[in-house]
Image 1 (cartoon, rainbow, N blue to C red):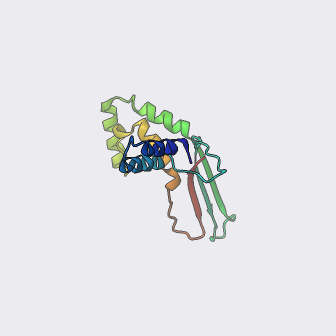
Image 2 (spheres, rainbow, N blue to C red; image 1 turned 90 degrees about the vertical axis):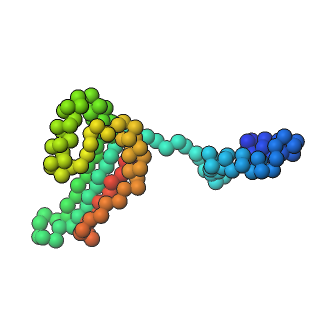
Image 3 (cartoon, one colour; image 1 turned 30 degrees about the horizontal axis):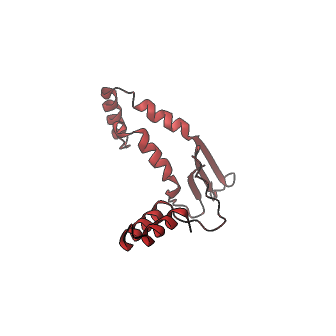
Length: 143
């Protein structure tokens, strides 16, 4: 039993809090810090350094054999680019956004903020890429 839970039960036993209050406190502790299995080391998740895109495809057209693409982009480059985008004057952003939209890229650079990039990086592990070729395999992840 962890120390916080023991203290809550002690306050309940001493009559300092009600059973409902104790239950709410214990639930709050469980939400804030889920218990790990005994013996499991709880290390903080390392901050990813690279965005990686890996593609493996079989070439059925009689070419040189299977294709393999392995792209490793430093996330620090993406972070620096986002910071630089905040320095672009508003008039230039309007022109850039218009050209991007004309090219079929619906991105508003004025809305791109460093905190949004960090949130995106956190969720990259959930990215799924659909490929029309069933023999091809595409992976997008951070490492």
